[in-house]
Length: 253
Ligand code: NDP
Image 1: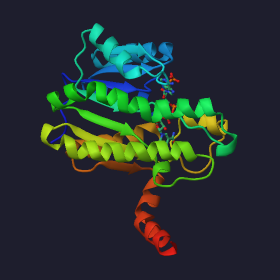
Image 2: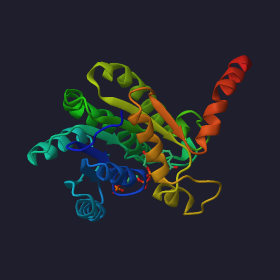
Image 3: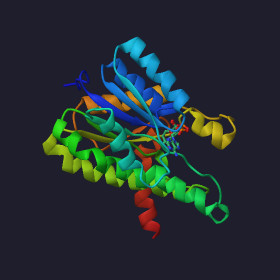
Image 4: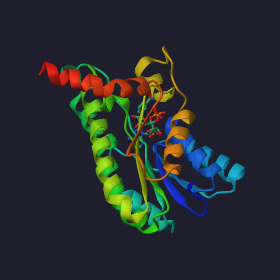
């Protein structure tokens, strides 16, 4: 049976653009209150008023820098201070540095690990008990195809996203008795500000839309807690070829 999101309240990190904003919209459309987290408060406020106006849900913007060390506790405090109950969590905030590892700025790499991994863990830990107790909501972690296909110029990014896949799969097993539905998304190329930054907006190839990524994720969640990871977009072809690819690599070794 599909998930009933009415009277739920879902945190979406990185909700100020791209996949996170699309996720917040999709959840609000289905009746969930949303707690919108990112640094750009103006964007969050704009989205919150749109969602409250169009869907009659409560939408709460919270400005937070997820490269900070104490993000999980800070967010838990902000949520508690507003008296909000949380039934779902979408850990979507993330970014990728892009360049040869030996040229990367070490501080920037630490920020990347903080946003993509350390605070994803910290925020999940801060809210896992209410999520499990509610047993009606979702826990979605946004990984990337890069997790399956690490490449040059994205060593730390690929490794962060591989962490997210393994972390989520382990929680997927743990969550079964509670009813919480757990999923990681491993999108292929998706048209968002992510690539505006990386490629200076020079789009090539076939990009999927953030809405398509979110729809694939929600379709899987609606079917139940059946799969720990959904690959979408151009990544699909890669994922299908993956077992063969891995076997070949093993033969070479
Ligand atoms: P965007 O750049 O559009 O969105 C990234 C979001 O993360 C923004 O809302 C941004 O908010 C937030 N964010 C980044 N750094 C911080 C920070 N320090 N503190 C708080 N929030 C932060 O890109 P996408 O929508 O594409 O990215 C969303 C997720 O999807 C990421 O995890 C990315 O790795 C993943 N992904 C993207 C793919 C793609 O092709 N686009 C493919 C595979 C995975 P703000 O700047 O306001 O803080």
